[in-house]
Amino acid sequence: MDNLPTLKNFGEQLDLLKRLIKEGNEEQADFIAQNMYENYAYARDGFLSQEDANLGARHDLAEKDERIAMLEDKLKEAFSVYNADLQLFGKFCKALQYVNSLKSMADLPDALRGIAGELGLGRIAVVLDRELCKDIPCPEIPTFYLKGCMRYIDATLNDGPNRVFLGPISRMMRPDVFFGDPEVGPELGGSCFAFGLRDKYTPGRLIGLISIHDPSEDRFQPDMGTDFLEYFCSSVASTLIDVINHERGELLRVDVERITRHDLKTPLNAVINLPHLLLVGEADPDKIELIKNIQDAGYRMLGLVNRSYDLYRMETGSYRLRPERVDVVPLIKRIATDLQNIIEGRDSALKVFIDGNEAGNDDSFYVQGEELLLFSMLANLLKNSIEASPTGSPVTVNLDQAEYPLISVHNFGDVPDAVRDSFFEKYSTAGKSSGTGLGTYSASLIAKVHGGSISMESTKERGTTVAVDFDPESAQGGDWQPENEFGPGSRC
Image (cartoon, rainbow, N blue to C red; front, side):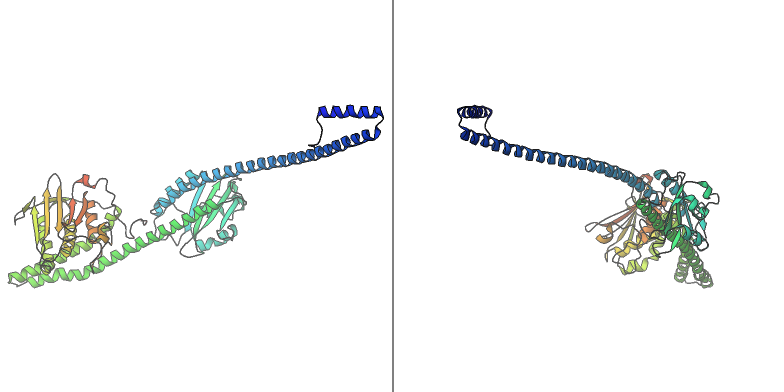
């Protein structure tokens, strides 16, 4: 194509060709004509090839445009599905908040109503094994005899890893069992999703059912995906079994405590009553004092046994304080007498100051509260402080009266780093072979129930001070909360 003449050259060749023919020079004319023909034949072939290439490119481009359009449609569809899944995931996350907030079976009806609102469900029901819920108060939650209803459950739920049902309610065997409602039958219409709740601690064991009904027959179809819904229902099952096990544990604990209190009273009767016989005819003042101390200790022990359940009520926030005007100075003296052996063994001393002055025999310091609780709180704090005090160092109790009483106990020891941040938590202890970690926890409960607060400061240079502030404002804004029997975060 590059050898083709220009239009001017082409015109000149035509003129030359005409002249040669006119002159009779046919041989040279044939040569020029043949050369022109070959050039234009070659050009024609080149143009035809180029046209074929252009047509092929245009076809490929059309196919690519079609593929791009198809990919754009798929991308839009995928984005739409992703966006819908994201919104659905957000709804399930909010619904899970209701599940995770369950603390007792009594909370379940409200949680189910909240879940139904978040997920836009017409009806949602949880039905549980009656034997599993035995003695647990959950009047609004329907129960059934699981073994007696297994034939209906097996006939309805599939045999997959997650036993579920999807489809119209008319295909559900005994919908009244699945919804725990005798009014629910096949004639209700609409579609259902049902899920078998499993015990995560006993593989394969069903503890009940969770069932959802929607008036639309298209809401739940056998071929729809239910990954989110099945995961959500598994989370419900996991939470429910934890709540049920905890409530059964609480019932057992209350029974054990009741039996223990009853059994402890029998030997305590001897501790309380035998001193009466020993006092008859006794003239030695020292022996009389010792016998009376034994008797007082027995009475205090009996009081603690009778009030042990009160600590549980303090943990759950159901304790009702009956305050009166209590002088804590005599309480501290009685505690000092009880701890005299420990004080002497550590070559220590217990000093009491009221508003900066050492307390005398006739001094008093009054607090509004319950005497037995205040005695227990001070006994725990003083015993811990004396045991933690370095040998030969005194323990000081400061009683300060401003608008509200403030009681602080100081010793020259420092709290180990391992328990400094958890000082008032249950079972927090270090360095004491016989320590249970309940003394400071009990003291913190008693301070809280009196409307005050408790705090601790400890350094190697200044020692440790535990302060109980009866100012109600000191209890505001604190993040400490009483734990239940199974530690932080467990359900009660």
